[in-house]
Length: 85
Image (tube, rainbow, N blue to C red; front, side, top):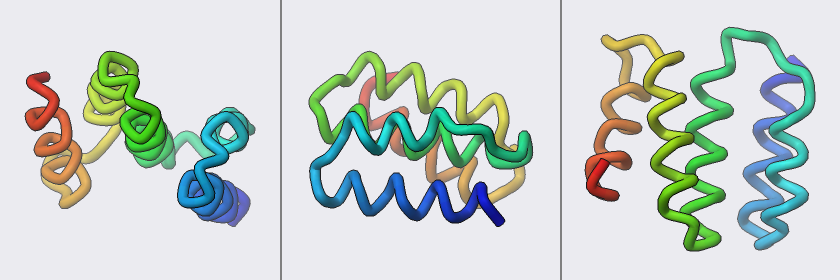
């Protein structure tokens, strides 16, 4: 449950443009099963900051952790492809 809460907090901080605080929240300990989602959100935050290379790296890491047959995998793939990744 803490993993979901941390993702929600990080997403809210991203919306508030508190990017460093959002990234710090994503560094907190979480269940390994959430790694892909955490990397995906990290990529979104980097992209919002204009850090395209960091976003691409985060999306690539997310794809390594996400279920290849899942929706988030396809969604993250589209994000990465939009960056030329």
